[in-house]
Length: 213
Image 1 (cartoon, helix red, strand yellow):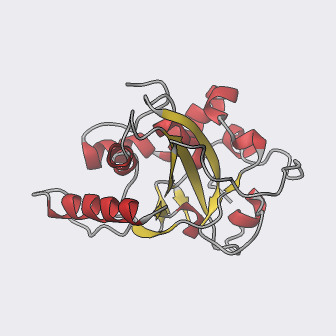
Image 2: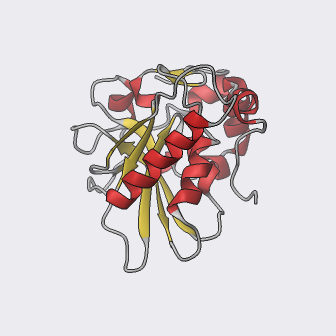
């Protein structure tokens, strides 16, 4: 389970485990739109990184990367499904490019952390890029190489994996847009987890949150 950062955060992550979902993975995007899928630790925080960007049509929190069908939050937290907490972005490539989304992804994660992200530990919090076609794969690989070759960037190697996208299972409704539903608990968790402190150390500024330009 996610490390508790105060009682409120623990309560927020343990809301009803029996909430009914439709049990289906996300469908293909509408004509003219594309998908991008990223794992970067807590999906509450990764969702806000992409919300409100021009050209982004939707951001869904969910689970992907493992074989388990229609997993629950509790199952993923038990580290038995192979899934990671992830976000799936539907975007208009005429308004925002996949390369731009990759840039947002990198600057909101710690790509040197092989054990999770920030205070959240375990494979379900890993950093991973899930490409949807060969063009996305190449762009992701190029962006990773660019960071690795940048002078004086990181002392540790980048451990973020780039793998083919598989079924994406939306998380329980209470996780969607959590930063809007309960901003107090969201900010308590984010601050206590040290996410923005670490991002500032790595990238020179805190992570992006929904609505910021």
